[in-house]
Length: 104
Image 1 (cartoon, rainbow, N blue to C red):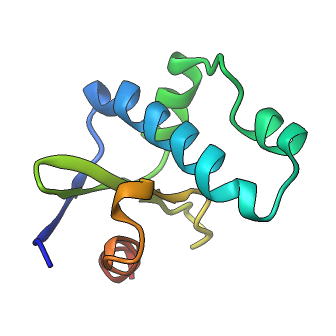
Image 2: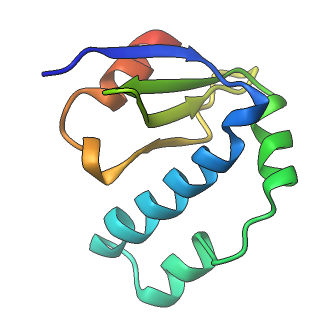
Image 3: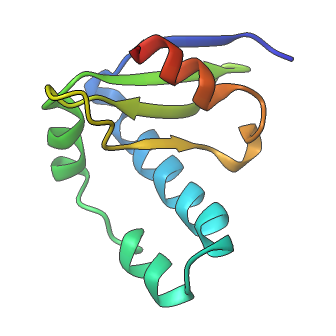
């Protein structure tokens, strides 16, 4: 299994995170949600500026694997994890575990 590197979010990550978020929700989310729910959750148009503000407002961590963004997560001041998404290409390879271990 390739190494997973965890690093802090940087503002130039936003386009990659939006794409990963949309791809993850649309591929993985379809297992448990209807098409209309998935479309509402991850629409075609996502405001990159708002997404960037959301990521910058709290510690957000990027998991890289094979020189690609494989996943990301964040943590709110009260300890709540708001977002945890892994790209479908990296599912079941320890990316979410690596992110959660880092956050803990």
